[in-house]
Length: 353
Image (tube, rainbow, N blue to C red; front, top):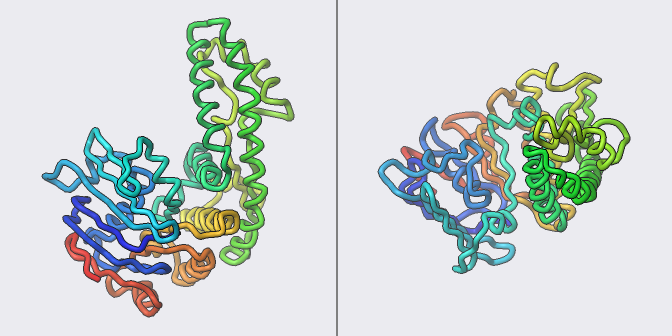
């Protein structure tokens, strides 16, 4: 999977850019606020409909304009992908055919992003780590999307019954339980597969620590999901929602036998997040037989040059198409510019190739 060409219009401070891309490495160089990150955000929006920096579309549309546009030609499957976004309307096209769901673009473009806030994977709420697991499953496990859609629909119906103390909650509970077990099994198997890559990448980037990952299924003990639901019926009825299940799951991260959230420095958090994302990209490559696309914004933030080099080495092992930003005159920019890459210079929203 890779992008051959991209067109960006009315996106933050970028008025219009039409660019030829390198199948392997693309380096975006410029000063702060020049528009480097906007380039990466545009690719992210094309895949997910939102940016790794913000969910608010009005922040992405150029001042004075009504909508933004991102279009690209994907080279592996030979498809033209397009998105137009206004504040309250989105239009999605694949090979000039309009599609109803953003997920159709996400299926065509598997985008990973490493950025200054990636440490949220370690420091943030369990929802951050559930999103991490579910991104991987969405792309490598054919049944996951339908299972999760069915689960969230049934969960909503049970919660509505619980709020009004309707006995129908038991009907929804019986339907919810087997799907919840399926999702739990898919996630557990995914993490088990991922551990091989996590161990290897950790040994290359953070060899002096012990790093472990455990899947917390979202309910206590060895009980089945239906047993856990039955035990909580009274409490769930009082609270008006389902208090256990895959929607509460987490990926526990342990550093040197201690909760990583409590003991990690910001730099360690960022390294662990990089290990997780790079491992996921490696797993994607093996299972899908083609690479993902990785966006890397401001790699130098809170990382020494030695650590940046280690991350870059592992990054290139994923065989992904990579987009990296760097400041003018930085050591990283100098290193990247010497590679066989397309180099783009950005000034005041103008991207020069």
